Image (spheres, rainbow, N blue to C red):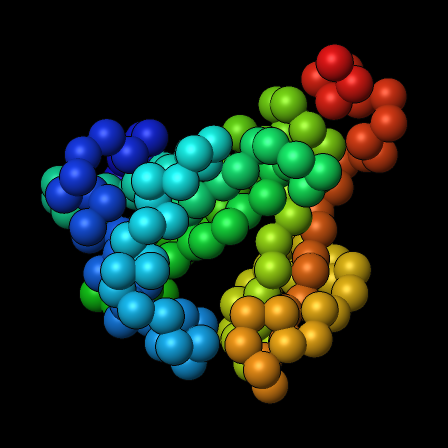
Length: 158
């Protein structure tokens, strides 16, 4: 298992394909093209977890804005699920964020009960619900894992 910043167009395509075949993106009706654009957005860091030189999982993180430390997306390819790779990647993201910020934020779709259980088991707390955020009839739940308040955090005030 190797985790690194995304470097190649082939890795971006592999990540978009993982999303296009997975929930919550299938249920939310996202197209492959919409998903592919996420990996080229300014200001995001994309981490890929590879096994046997294949993309097994990825995470997209934003370190900008009021929700700095925001995990925009995380997914594991179906063939690699159930082996702890998602948890390992999430812990990697937490370590990266906590070097600069005291909070990791994420949204989880209200119908994605398995993901919510995983996040809760790893110490994330639900902050609130945003109704009809991405599509009508599907709510998003904002979750946070924290190691302290933002105010006074050494890297956060500068």
